[in-house]
Amino acid sequence: MKQVLLIDFGSTYTKVTAADLETREILGTAASYTTVETDINEGLEKALAKLFDKTGEIDFDARFACSSAAGGLKMISCGLVPELTAEAAKQASLGAGAKVMKVYSYQLTEGDREEIEALKPDIFLLTGGTDGGNKNNIIANAKMLAASKGDFPILLAGNRNAADECRRILEEAGKKVIVTENVMPRFNELNIGPAQSKIREIFLERIISAKGLSEASQLISGIMMPTPAAVLTAMELLSKGTESQSGWGDLIGVDVGGATTDVYSMSYGEPNGVNTVIKGLPEPYAKRTVEGDIGMRYSAQGIADAAGIPVIARLAGLSVEMTEKLLKQISEKTDTLPETEELAALDFALASQAVKIGMTRHAGTIEKVYTPIGETYLQEGKDLRNAEKVIITGGSLIHAERVKEIGANALYDVTQMQSLKPVKAEIIVDEKYILSAMGLLAQHAPDVALDIMKKELVTHGIAE
Amino acid sequence: MENKKKLVIGVIGADVHAVGIQILDHAFSDAGFDVTNLGVMVSQEEYIAAATEIDADGIMVSSLYGHGELDCRGLREKCNEAGLEDILLYVGGNIVVGKQPFNEVEARFKKMGFNRVFGPGTPPEETIQCLKEDLGC
Ligand code: B12
Image (cartoon, rainbow over all chains, first blue to last red; front, top):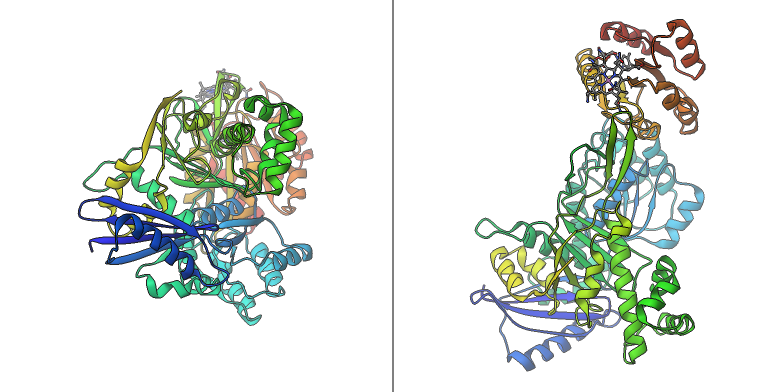
């Protein structure tokens, strides 16, 4: 294997990256519109033609692809207690690169069933109860799902002692059922790996063909995975390194898109201070959260709602009236480019707040409690104060002006001391947009992928 | 995991006395119970969440620092609300401030909905005996 093609079928763009494994270099990158409605290969071929314009014809030894086209991998997850199995199920889905449309807890109602039918998930993840724990809830939910319309596969990852009965109920109703290990086998023990590998398998076997992506498969030698899973893989490699090369240690990744903002952290996030008691579910080392209401276009209003119009206006240096007017404009015309000075200023403000809100929701929190012997701290989620790198990726930010200033919004803020965000970090930008490609390459040549990332990611200096 | 009776244990409120609960964890486990130990500084909601997922037979609340009476208030009602109407609730340790007549203390906690109340220095064997009686095992 010498020259490989890495393809990312995005919701809007099909991006191609050519890499040389011997020289450990990127030969070139190019993009064209994704054409999943007609024939996915059209967009791919156009992107390839653009690539070859730059590099000359390349005879690839292998081609690997990931995809978030046709809505991505849409999942619904369901558990028993919101902070426990329902949260574990949500984390399993997000970490597998899914778009989580809804999370249910306790017993599903008739109304929920109708909502599920309307949402038409690609996969339904059903959990609840520790092994040997609560059975009634998951069985009731299996019955409700058995009565639902829709041919989505159901991944069962709950109380193992209820699995046989749930499987029987669902299979008798003609549902496709896949059983795997419990996402929370014992109280507060997170076990999301097995569910995630099943999600990957279902994605490969069923979802790809159902979404018209399989026509591309004759061109592609390697596995496909959802794009966010590829990005997560790349960040994990970059953080942990390989046997022969060290990684960068704890790091954060932020991807502000048009509709959502994804935040990644690679860190155990254990408490830094003494006298700290940890609460809540243990955190996965490689964690992904997605803010569905925070994005540069479809969710621009969501940013304004969360941050407040006056904050956006002040950051943009625009009047409140102007800000409102432009917000309306970009939310309606979502392909608006920041072509005027005002629009560029608004984008700067929106991006800054998107990073800030996304990171605040992702990071853990600490709360001081006064006990009779003095102060003690309660930590929930990850302590990321010591993470030293923040990687900015995603089409809307990598070419933005003042990206360091935007990225600095991911950092610790004295007005929000309870939020455990990085205190001081290098802002690094994925300017060539190669992270998903490197996640794909990581499966086959991790050392090369790591080398390329270290070379190609561009530092914009340290912020604090 | 075979048909062991399941207990959630922990020290309630802002209480950090960590030793007794460790001893109870070992004693109950050795006596054949499946124990989920939530450690110190446990809120009412945490007991209930854990008991719900593991389908617990009992919640064993420990309190040593004297604020037990405040911390335990409303736990039974919240259990009922969460669908844990049949769950066994025990409390023990130094559950009130100073030395008060135990029968009065016991009456107050029973009124709060605890099935059994244990005074300072109760040996674990006594509690295990009660659990076996109450849970029929
Ligand atoms: C060590 C200790 C501390 C240490 C704790 C270290 C740690 N992280 O564990 C420190 C210094 C931090 C501390 C702090 C405080 N402590 Co202190 N502490 C003690 C001490 C000396 C020993 C506790 C111990 O570990 N005992 C050994 C274990 C094995 O026994 P146990 O905890 O009683 O548990 C057994 C039984 O009670 C029973 N049990 C316990 N829970 C339950 C629950 C159920 C359901 C059942 C059935 C049985 C049961 O079974 C256990 C095993 O056999 C006691 C005095 C004493 N001798 O008991 C005071 C004592 C508990 N502390 C006391 C107090 C007041 C405090 C402070 C408020 C202030 C202070 N004086 O320092 C703070 C509170 C801090 C907080 N936020 O919780 C008082 C409580 C008085 C009251 N309730 O009216 C005590 C009794 C001392 C006293 N005589 O004044 N303390």
